[in-house]
Image (cartoon, rainbow, N blue to C red; front, side, top):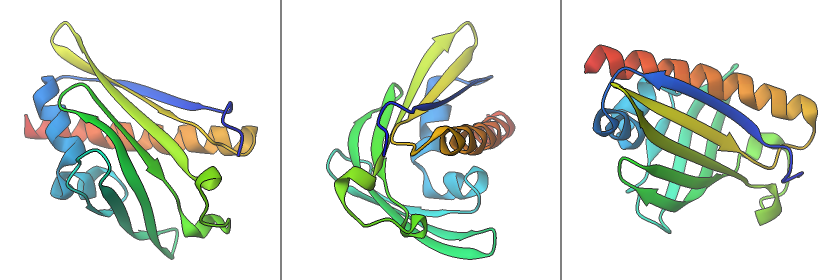
Length: 144
């Protein structure tokens, strides 16, 4: 994987950071905006995360580890999908970083994912993360 091919996405959500943070770490909320994924984690540094579901007719059981979780500020974790067809070794994991920042009455959510194998993978990743963030925005603004 090319650690320098970083996908980026961001969105402004009309809600306080606390509401956005809760949506980022609550399994029932995540299922609503992250393509129906069932996510399991206690969101403590060093803890495992699993994502299970079905996308494009294929079942997946992805995994990772929480690298950092600072409530209402940032969340960082690794992610690996066996559907990638790659070996389950550290160099085939992505690192996803989500930062929250205040902006007037909104919360700006910025997301980065490293480890994209080529430009096409980076672009596809940005598209998927953009859709996820749009879903997060809709979920939080409806719930706030």
